[in-house]
Structure formats: C-alpha cells, structure tokens
Length: 402
Image (cartoon, rainbow, N blue to C red; front, top):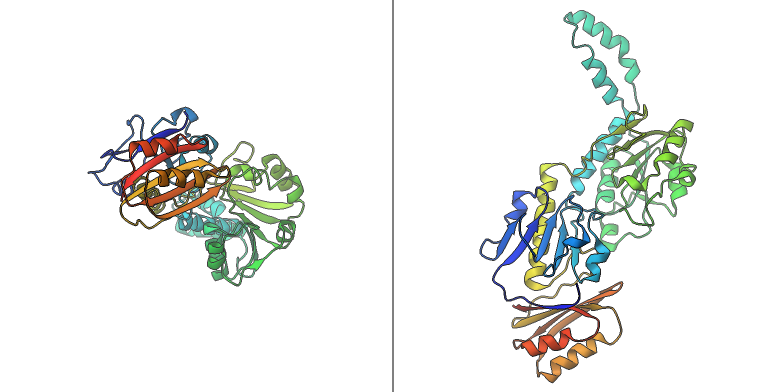
C-alpha cells in the first residue's frame, strides 16, 4: 500500500469494530455521518480493544486505528506508521480502575485475606455455631498480616495510573518513593509533592517494602525486573505488576521468590510456573475490567477518532505527533509525509502556484513521520491535491470543508 490521495467529501465515515465496545462509546458516532459495525469492509478507521490486528488488515482507505485502552502491543504500529495511519490509545481512561485494583493487591499482600476466605469456606459443613466460633478463633492467627501504614511503596512509572496510586498510598499513610526518568510535564503537575523522587531503580528497590510497576511495555522496559534488578530488592519485599507481564522476567522472579528476596508477587497476568506458587497471587487481567473503565476508554477512543476524521486534529497518538489547530473556516488540508528536510517549502510552493491563500498552519514531526494541518480560504482543486500527492515522501493528503 503506497501513498494515495484521499478526499474527505464522502458523506459517511466507516468505522470497523473488533471486540465488544461499550455502547456509550459507539453512541458518540453520529448516525447521519458514520457507519459503525464489525462487518465493514475497507473502513476509514478501526476501533478495537484486545483484538490482535494484523498488518494485512490495514486496508487502502484506513486512516486511523484507536485502541480502547492504554496498551497498544496488539496493533502493528510500525506498519501503520509506514502507511501513514494514525494509531490512538486512551491513556488515563482506565487509570482509576487499575488504581483501585492495585490498592486491593496491596491489601491482599499485607493481609492474608485470600487464605482467610478459603479457610472459612472450608467450614461450610459445620452447623454448630459454638464449634464454628472455636475453630475460627483457634485458626485465625494463621492469617495474620501487617498494616500498610508507615510502610514504604516504590512506584515505578508516574503517569496517569502511577500518580493515582502514589496519591492513594499517601492517603493510607505510606511513604511513597517514585521513579520515572521520562515523566511528562502534565504527570509532574499531577504528582503529590510528598512523593520522594528517586534517581535510579536500585535505590528505590532497596528502600521499598512494596514495589508497584506502572510503565508501558517497550523494548527498554521488557524484562526490566530481571536477575540483576531483583538483587537490589529489600529481602521479603512485595512486587506488584499491573502494567504488562513481560516487564517481569518470570524465571528470575521464581528464583528470587525461592531465595526470599521477594516475599510475594501479586500480578494481573497468570503465567505457567506462577499460577500455583504459594507466595504468588494472580488475577485474570482485571485491571480495566470495570463497567466505568470500559465506557471511559470507548468514549475517549471514539472522541479521538471523530476529531481526527472531521478536523485532522490528533491527540493521544502513539506514532504521530500531537497536533491541534482551531478551524479558521474555509478549507483544510492534512498532509502526512516522511520527516525529511524541505517538505513544507515544497507544499507551500504548490499552494502559492495555485494562488491559494494560507490562513493558518501547523507542522510537527515525530520520529520518521511529519504531519501538517494547513487552513486555506479557497477550495483546493483536484490538480492542487494531485500536485501535493506527487511530492516525493508525501504519504497521504486529506481535504476538509471546515
């Protein structure tokens, strides 16, 4: 699939869905301008959750893919970028849902609630209340624990979820240590001032009673909890992973649990070798499995697709720059090109040759791709569009009536 011109004059945008998308999100698409469904061929956009999208599904008219969730490892991002397709995710939409599960995990790690519930279930056959009470009182010491108050929590990754976890842990009376070398300005503003910023991971690991992971799965974070990093953990500390499973090296973790370096592991990702481990507590990927989180993600993904399809604006893309330009009226061109020198000059030269007046414009780049929004007064002709498309390294051109 090579570069191709696209005219935004069709009355209907086609959105193909995979998985069960929350109705509140689907309702965001106006019925008089969008066709939404799971059987649509050659869509303008794809909206999905966990479906693993194959590069072969990137059909000719596809302009955008929106993942209703923070993770996007089920989307072929590199292939999308190569074809000028914008990939969106929904960071923060499920943050509160994950935060609450992490708090539950902290409590489960500190107090043997799971063991206590299982013990009581085993007493179901006892009808004598006095005997039941005697057994409960005699055995409850087996399920003793410790308070979170005054303990230290190390938060690795201080984005939307990590900052919420840090704030909640402070409210529980914990000392919070934070580490994030790539923290954004927005995330820094959200972070409570009481969080102690650590300069490196070994320092955080050595001081924390509990460590919770909230980093995305990237080549540099895959296996970041490994044999070497686990040596820095305080003996008997608890590791929580509600980010992504491959961030933790399973074999190294099992050895660390056996040595007592890690006292307990609580995670949202069942894997062989850990499912029945006595000091491991696993949940079946429940982080975003709340009604509210699914709705928030679907609504956010739909809004981002609508804004992109109707105005060209981009927010929360994982492969394109964030670009927003308030419409100036008239017409708009959205041009995607490879990030090479001289491209903007070539475009404006063609506009000038056609005596098109530019009202406003913005140009941003990210990695190997650049994106331009150009507002003009007069309707661009087919010849002008073809001229821009013919520029070497232009990937696609879209036209809007604003």
